[in-house]
Length: 175
Length: 301
Image (cartoon, rainbow over all chains, first blue to last red; front, top):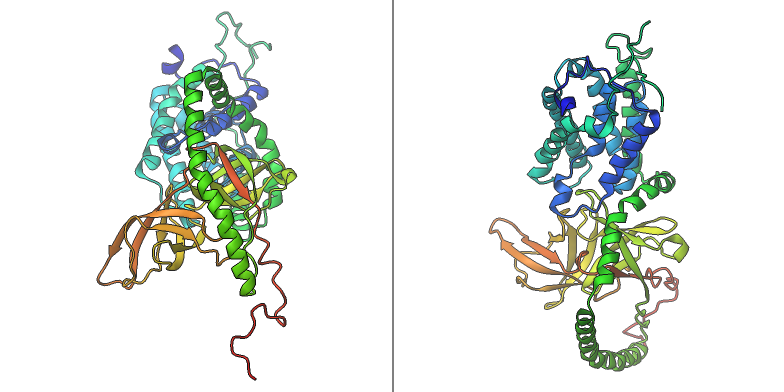
């Protein structure tokens, strides 16, 4: 539970391997494809967007705009949606994440939830807007609010899933 | 594993290209994709190729459901199977009479058609396919079927369940195909009301299992509970498939049309198997125009 309340900017992290970052993004796509039905489909949190924020904040050298675009395209294909809708929302999300990254890093993990919530809400609303412009039906209210809310509530627990615990007796790195 | 190693997490250095440029390019690319795919439908090949990438992930996501289904299948009790078997046998007996009557009717109908020198109605042929999953997006009313191009499934084929018309094949992958449900907003079906024979159009509303009939004049005789059948005038759906049941009929004094909504009869959650019908070829083999199929009614002596 220590990692939930830790100061992210100053905590010593072990950077995960590129392979693990890719695997985790793949797992988030699998989460998307689970058999959601009915109400579950309306309130399913967007795990891919959440991970995109997470890696965008903590591993900006690995997670680039291209990765966001590619994830969006794959997500569109798998959902049989118009190609490019998620690519657009995820690219926009990437810009917002990079813009707010210094600010997000300066907060405690629990306080970051509000920033993440805002990012997820904006992404969701952009997606709804694009879908509306493309002539799809207007989603019900739960979709606009509950999906981002559930996603943001998952934020404090991400380090438990994604990070390896730093070794206790790690020697300090001297330049 | 590697020793303690951190990628630089610096807040101050900026990459060579500014953020707005790097992301702007991808944003524009995404917009171009949306335009090309939604408006011009030019990205079918890209869909096919990218599908190969996402397929393994989707297969993995299906594992929990598959496990549940398999375990359920093994645990099905003998009594339940026997009860189901009995019920099915009763149903079969009940339908046997109808089927026998139908053969007689078809024979009579063919004879009448021959007398009137009309082309005979094409027989319904089809292939049973299994549903894989519904599209995991609340905006699109689509489902995926087992069986695709290699099984001879063609885009445009109507898809039926035991309760009625479910949708239409809109995209064919090598081993899967995508069905757009009739409640999808982009689909319009020519229907007739069974009780009165009135022909009109039913449109998807984009809400699950809901259709609307926007072009019914306000003086028309329509009632809640009327059954909608395909009218067959588009040449795509054969005539007489069950589509939906009217659920609400609202007449506004100020409007020239009745506001009608209908509930689709075929649910996707009732039965895992569906029937994919062969696309109607009758309209493609129309005789040339200089050789009219109907004899002129009034012949000059």
